[in-house]
Image 1 (cartoon, rainbow, N blue to C red):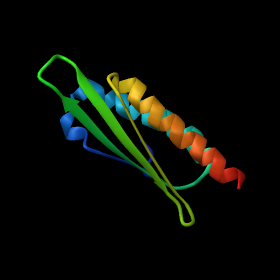
Image 2 (cartoon, rainbow, N blue to C red; image 1 turned 90 degrees about the horizontal axis):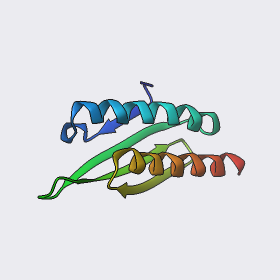
Image 3 (cartoon, rainbow, N blue to C red; image 1 turned 180 degrees about the vertical axis):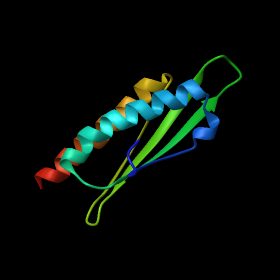
Length: 99
């Protein structure tokens, strides 16, 4: 994984979920860093109810010397929630790069 990526809150997740998170983040960060250079900080949270499902929330932040991109999303599926956040980060990075 890239040295510019920090993922916080992984202690709440199982090993398979951690590997999936790292894979999705690494792949998408490659696309993002083409448009904007900065450090990615991702906060991951798993909300468990008494049932057999969990809700996943991700907060993504890219800090550059002159910009701050901050997004958040959640979903009942891990990959969907993470893809939503990474897509929002990518769209915001493209928007900042055009300005």
